[in-house]
Image 1 (cartoon, rainbow, N blue to C red):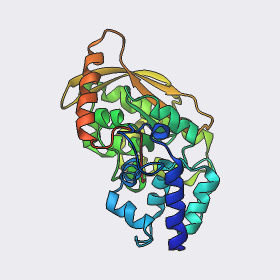
Image 2: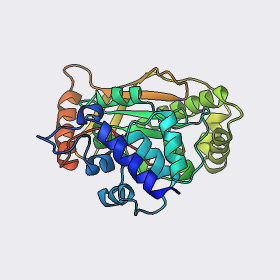
Image 3: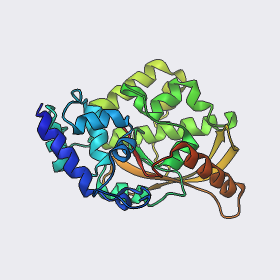
Image 4: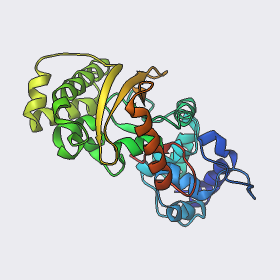
Length: 289
């Protein structure tokens, strides 16, 4: 690990980013160029103290998950991300269908939707980046490891996720999850992670195994979602998957029908989210994995 070079690289890349580049409020005059340390830490989903130690060349050896989060927060290109990994003593991730690097353009689109819940997810339903409104609507998406990073895996194995949806919608959601996963497996049939996910779900969930046996395949690019939120009750939203340059990543946006109750419910969630994510203003959250 080249600790000093890593620290210098992080400082220089932070100085190149302006608040507007990542959807962060400028908050008055700044004495130094670029983002503040705590803003990068917030975007990367880590503590400001931890990030400060990395920039000072005295932090611990960062994990692959931490480096992935920093690459997204700092808007690194794929080449810059690979350089970051090498400085930290890690092998750069392969640039394959399972590569979780989210490009700058897609992150700018995410930052440009401050009033709507939006996120970037892989075709295995792993959330790679999200904005604060998505956090406010769906709850935090951090802290999961291994197969549990996939929302599809948690849907069939973790009752806590299902409690976010009315019980009468569970059957519809289960079918959609299975059909989407089968489409992902068809797109990359030899991918070990996709195959591991399917095998684990077939072993753990009789519901999943039964639906999987039906061989239904579909990516529901438009749908209606009803989410049971503890603060605003049931909120009904349009769910749209927007096409991206990469087949294995998608931008997902939740939006209310004009004049519906969901409009005011989202406005309330925006206030709750603003209170929750002070002091740095809002911006897309980039997950450490």
